[in-house]
Amino acid sequence: MSDQNDVTDAQQRATELWTTTQPGVPLFMNVTLTIQPERREEFLTVLREVLPAARAEPNCSYLHVGQSMTDPDVFVLSEGWHDLAEYRDVVLPKPYFQTYLKISESTYARPRIVVPLTSVEPM
Image (cartoon, rainbow, N blue to C red; front, top):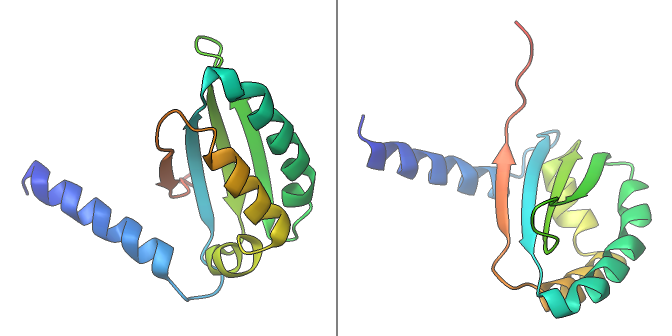
């Protein structure tokens, strides 16, 4: 299999993951955000407002945020959700989440990078 096929297959799997309607499919992802330096405090304010509500969602397994030690404008969100379809169809449309997205997206210096993950279980 060529590298191109590997990339195409991975992209297809990611597309299928985001469009699934099957209940109970877990979602694990890392989201890297690069924020405009002059808007970092604005971003942090809205992030700190949304975290308690998002973490309180019954569907949330975990939601951790780290700030790069070498570039203070880079943040990595590590998220786990019990049910991808519920996250996409119930959590994301909530007013508090939409407010966060509207404000935070306006602070991005670059497009966000979303890396969906699969769980690796011990053998």
